[in-house]
Image (cartoon, helix red, strand yellow):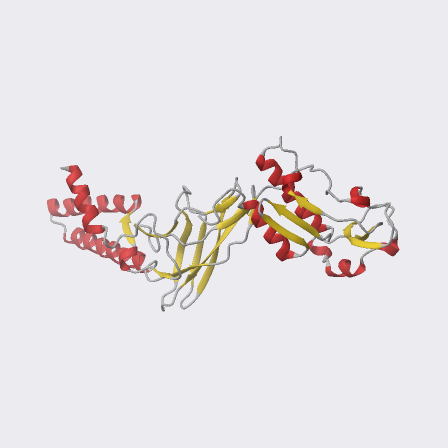
Amino acid sequence: MTGGLRAWLRRSTGKWLPRGGTLDAGEVVLSQRRVFILPTRAGIGFALLLLVLLIGSINYTLGLGFALTFLALSCALVDMVFTYRNLAHLALQQGRVPAVFAGQEAQFELHIANRGKLARYGVWVDFGDVPEARHVTDIGERGSAAVLLGVPTAARGWLRPARVVLSTRFPLGLFRAWSYWRPAAQALVYPRPEEGAPPLPLAGNAAGSGRAGGNDDFAGVRSYQAGDSPRQLAWRQIARLDPALGGQLVTKHFEGGVGDELVLDFAALPANLDLEVRLSRMTRWVLDAEQRALPYAFRLGTIHYQAGAGAAHQAACLRALALHGLEEAP
């Protein structure tokens, strides 16, 4: 009997309930069929109180008791309608999802728009696998709000979080309305940079730190170290750094010799190292080369990038490291 009832519910509701694996592409409006509502514990307790008042009024023929019971019931029904309207017809759209390194928290930006004339209060937003929602927002009439939802990361590759749950108990808390949303958003997680990695594999005379090199060829900039000549300070780069944001002095870095070249080659790493350790080391070298403004070539399997530097070059190298041996997209 129970199995037949469940099958009937699946057949009757499957046409309009959102499927668990379906992703919501683009903007989604919380229509009537996407909003669910049930009484809370306080609402159930309130219903029991109304039942006691009704029984008492019937037994003792209390006119004022009937009036109080039906007045309270009317307030509960009005609360149910307002709780539903507080969530219905909101427009949802995914925002930016920046890439992060493994171990950091991925930030998913979600935009909530209210195109109606009624302000929405106490809308709780979080992922469905979180026991208690951590983010609450109010959206004014014809206004919008942005919510950042954090997800911890542990492994490299693409990260797609659980579905988002929006809920509200406004205004009296007797009912809880909620809705599900599965935005087609994913975060790219780079390998964790290795701590205490060996120095950059500079070729030729650049194998050392470069402080004792000649002043023939400019090789980039590095952090200021005690004893550096003031004439070698990179004043252009220093002027771009805001001390309030952690800016610091940087020194021009020169290398003697004309054969110096920085090549980050995955195949040149010791084969006895674990795959993830090698990827972490390559990640650290990419970051170090960018910090020192050193042009570097990159080789990883069939991926070969010519020597270069800059945000685009760094992003391409880190993306290749993050997706090495994995599918390009989930």
